[in-house]
Length: 163
Image 1 (cartoon, one colour):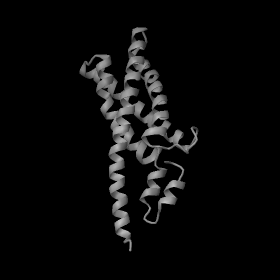
Image 2: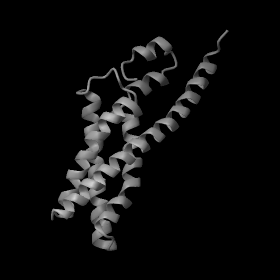
Image 3: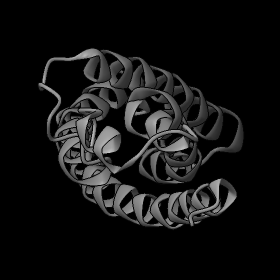
Image 4: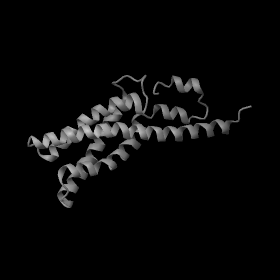
């Protein structure tokens, strides 16, 4: 006979393993997005774009690429339409990340005299951690809320729509 606390324990263990594998996938996608964004940023700077104007352009390109990859691979929300509540929430998360990114680049350049591209690279770890936590717990959270329900069974989880 199955004991309720055993199922809960198994779910919590699976969720912890899933959190780590998601974070690894998030970082892989993020590395690709960062390379893309830094390349766009460097090109924009090379074309004479002011650095604070180049950040949002580069961030938008990386964010667009990131949404598609995170939806399909990192958070495995395959059954959710591309234009969904998750997309709107992801956009809000990324706007917050952009704000953090702009603030950090400004502080690094203006007050620490860090070169523009190095400032952008230094901002990345802080932005990555904050956007991962917010994406997992809010933007793509539907599936994880279902997992944490003590009465959820495998059929509920498959039918939740966000996995």
